[in-house]
Each structure stands twice: as structure tokens, then as C-alpha cells.
Image (cartoon, rainbow, N blue to C red; front, side, top):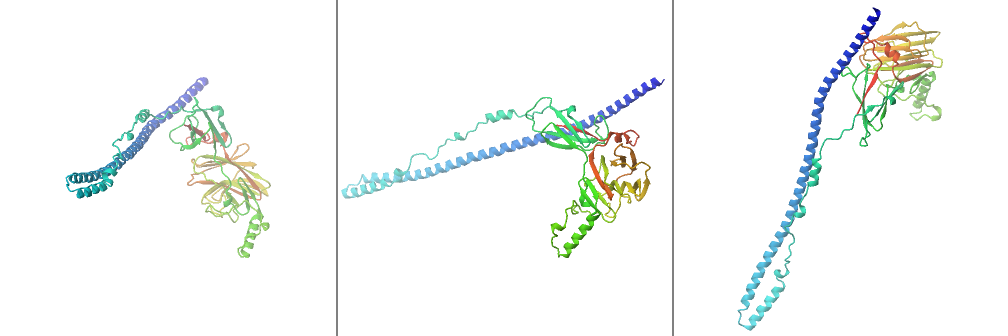
Length: 462
């Protein structure tokens, strides 16, 4: 009986999985049909644009070459017309002189004849007919402007679509997943020397198995990839020194309590003001890692010994860890909205969530939000892992070493959140950009009660 139930359970599991696969495949088919229509329209539009450009170039070349022929015709016509006018004038002068000479032959008086003959000789020496060239300055030949586009026609006859290389194949042996990176490797089935670069498209998914069309993150693009491997980096951030309290020293992913730094800076400013605005002597000041506030928000002040991360979270699943360094009296780690006030303390407003570690007089651990505190009856860990699922409104805290769940907040984030940290008398070291541990991903439950795996990356290479 038990064996039959187990066998039936396996069948049901297989059928359910197959049903999900078929559902996903049908969605893919529908999406492909829609994409086919839009892609075809785009290709036709591109084709028409290319031909329009080609036609435009041909018409421009035709107009240019036609203009050249007409200019040459005009030049020759002017040359020939000028020669014609000059020749006609010379002919008229020649005919007049010829008529005068014929009449001189009829003169009987010797003296008058001699005068007429001398006059004719003088006129002949300067007559246009004898000074006028009889060579054409331009010919009627225009064959040197003849064109032959037979070679171009043969090239046009070869117009065709671009040869498309075969699709790359994922090289599973070269793919690698580490704490904060995913390396995707691929290879070409056939070597193609004409390939200039690759385009890697990727998106996060909240499930295992085949890609789904609906309920997915947007595709992101890594363009101009010259090699057959690309490394994607997970959500990473540093501490934002421009937001930190003056009593905190911040260096990228480390923050340390320094009770003297705020006083020193105040003294330096006082001396600058007292000196009439002059520059403080470098020997009287010491360099700090705190940059001036430049992000449009004020530094934390008062008893809010807080520093924020330099990046916000607006979607997806993310994980980071903090570890207390040196001797500390207390620290908090969590998230806050962007409008978290400069006097606000983590967990004491409705815009922040955190777990608070107290190591002063006695050691304790508590979850805080909206000025409400819940004591956590678990050993205080050396490091705390923070898991934020923005879309599901879930913020969970874990023992960073053994991934024991410490506390979970369930809410609905109405705006992006920023990682937030508070430390008093001690230091914190941040480890960001970590992959969501699989054991944590397995703990998370969907709204329907099924397990939701940690975020993965679905690549698409072209």
C-alpha cells in the first residue's frame, strides 16, 4: 500500500512538473508568435530604410552626373557660339574687302588704281579673316562622359541578407557561480572569423527550470563582449561616507566609532572661522575618510550613529553580511527608506527595520521597528546576514556562520530601501555583493506555500 502511494506520488509529481513545463512552453509559443510579428515589422522597416537610403544615393549620384554633363554641354556651346560669332564677323569683313578689291580692278586711272591697291593691301594685313583661327575650340564629342554600370549592376544583383552566424552554445564546464559573481561561458559550434563581438542578455529569475515569459525581471544587456566569457556581479554596495555621523570613520565596507573625530572637526572649523576664513594648517589637521555631504541629504547627527549604503534596493532578492570588529557596546543592521531622518535611530521609526545587538553590561539581541522591540532568545552571533526580498516585502536576519534564522519582518515596501548600519564603541565590517545562500533560498516560502529558490541568472547570447 505504501509502495503504491509512493509510486502514485512520483507519478503526480512528474505530471505536475510536465504540466508546468507545458504551460511554460505554451507561454513561450504565444510570446514567440507576438515577437515574430513585431520582429518582422522591424525587419521590413529596416529593409525599406536601407533601400530608401540606396535609392537616395543613386538619385543624388544621377543628379550630380547629369549636372556634370549639362555643365560640359553649356561650356562647349559657349565656346562654339563665340567662335561662330567671331567667324561670322570675319566672313562679313572678308566679303566687304573682296567686293572692294573687285571694284578696284575696274579703275582705269593709274594713280587712282595704285591708291586703291595700297589701301586693299593695308586692310588685308589686319583683316579678321586672316587673323581668325579656323580650329574648333570645342568638339561635339561627349562620349568621354559615357557611363558603364555593368559592374555596379552585378554588385546590386548580389544584394542579399547578411549571413547570420550560428547561435553560440553555453559551455557548462566554463560557467562558474561564486559568492558575488556568475561567470557565463560559451563557444561557437563552428569557428567564424567574421564575428566582431557578442551580446549577452541576462535577467534574474525566481525559479528553477525553463525560462518563463511572464512575471520576469527585464532583460539586461552586456554589449561589445570580445571574448567567449563574461562575469556578472551580484548586488554590491559600499558604505556612503557622505551620510555618516561625524563620530564614524568610513572606508568603503568598514565603519568604526571614533568619539574624537567629531570634536576634532568642530575644533578645526572653529579655528578656521576664528582666523577669518583662512585655510587650516595641514600639520594641525589629520586626514579622515569622511567626504563632505554631497548627495542632497544631511549627515546623521545627535545620537543617531548611523551610516547608509551607497545604493538602494527597488526589486529582487539580495543578501549581505556584517561582522562586529574590536570591542563594541552596541550595533544595529537593517534597512531604511530614503526619507530616514538625520536624527532618527534605526528601528525607532516606521521607516526603518533592524536587529540590534547590545554588548553593554549584558549581551542581548532584539528586532526593532516603529519604536517596538522584540527580544530574540538566541545566542548573539559573531556576524549577521541580511536577506531582503523587496518584491515579497520580506526582511530576514540570519546567523552569518550557520545561517540560523534570527528574525523575519513581513511588510510591503512602498519605496526603495537602503542598507543601514549603526555602531557605538566598536567597528563593523561589511561583506556585500554575496549570492543568496541556497539554504536561505530554500527557507523562503511563496504566497502559495511552495518553496522559492534563490535568484538565478538566465543568459541569452547573440
